[in-house]
Image (cartoon, rainbow, N blue to C red):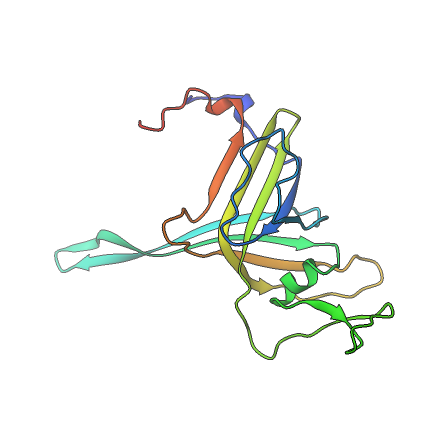
Length: 198
């Protein structure tokens, strides 16, 4: 409904980020806390939360007869989520560094408490589904899913005595054929009675 309505203001009070296999859907049952098999919660993130960005590039068509463009052509769309992970583990470190696996440091397979991760000489495809969930109070939950994408930028790692090490990444959505680029699923009473056909 148009007009001033404070009940429609949303604050992402708390949330979480998950990764899954490509094409994994978000659960639509909001009583289901666990997203199900194939999804991994990446744990704590920095207090900055998540920066959601959708940038469209429009190329103008100029004409001899007019000073301003007469039409725009959509040439590009970037949909990204930027966030910083605070936990180091076998899920977060490879995501930050571009794929691969953590394994025993000893080539015989015996870890003896030591593990290693090899950074590849060149970039490699490391595609995932990405899920974002946030709540505003106890009654409102939003879920956002990118069914296919990958980390396209990693922030510098700062190692300092007075701050936690952060694994800052930018995750970019990729076209998944016939599926949407991304999907919001909301448990929010403001959408009740909305008319999708309008």
